[in-house]
Length: 433
Ligand code: ASP
Image (cartoon, rainbow, N blue to C red; front, side, top):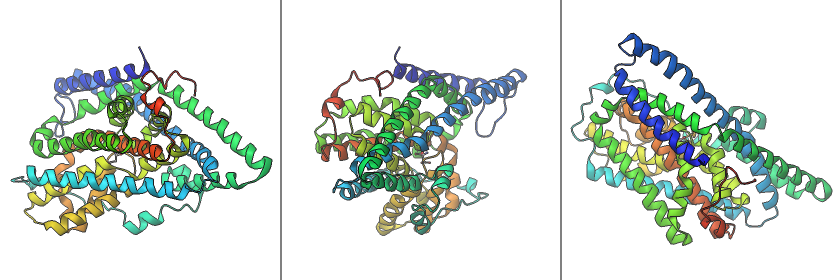
């Protein structure tokens, strides 16, 4: 069986076993410990013990790769692009496309939520004893892009700062003349191969890691909460799927004339990683590998666009924030009007830039969106119960967006290998780097 199929099997089994355990042990958001002694043993030793340990080791091994991979890959990309006069235009195009797709995502979310009215007639009693999260300001988010200490940026996994430093380093290599510049570029190209090999080695763990993560998550998920918030939950889910398949599919077809079915098939593995880790950052090694190797985007583009996307492009998160804003406005019976919703599109697009690619942060930056239009931040308490599952799905949409934009930019810069894109027999796990 191929590794991709094993990973898929791990996902399906993980969800099934998790849901079964959840029903068997009777766990939900109010009942967090099993009632029988046998059930408690399973919970403590199996779920929170062995499975949790393996799941955490798996996520740690993915995160371990992120900084070395982004640094080395981006230095390589920038070093070979450094002399290229289009570098600035390329970066601008990528950022604009990221912002545009996010704004589109949130407009779609608001539009559909206004029709469905998910928040009409909601009981707000739960929101009373909720501590408001503090969201970072737009100014701080911007200042934070520029590193004062690259080692600290790497140690803290501050991706925007690592990106800025790596580009500078790569450009400097390309401008260093003679043997020194050449040998440094070769050194980093070799290092890149070694780091990619590490990605492949650690991916062997994936089927087991995915299984353990999903059993743990689904066994403790409160399915009751999903029923209580069914309208909100399914509206978010619907817009997420519509955006992923409809908007990205249409963009790929119209702008690049590529077959979107191939894109989605090749992205499956990445989607499973994003779904089980709920973290764009942890998924980054797999996204980068798939975008370069399977979808055929040149390293010069992918090494920049994928890490940048994992950090600033969060269409799925923006969709959740759009629906959540409408939901909270309706639950509190506050009409924020057209101007209010335009403001939401603007702030949620910025919030998406400021949302780190780790689990649950979208809910924190939602505070910033709500504040911008004077909605009560305590409203977040109403939707927190179903956020874990939505986080998994929206992260999958976030990374799909990163890959779609990378393909579009690659194609427009003539740095997309279309034959490679269309070749369905490629196998990133076994092919030499
Ligand atoms: N978990 C999301 C991600 O990593 C961010 C969020 O919406 O909380 O992409």
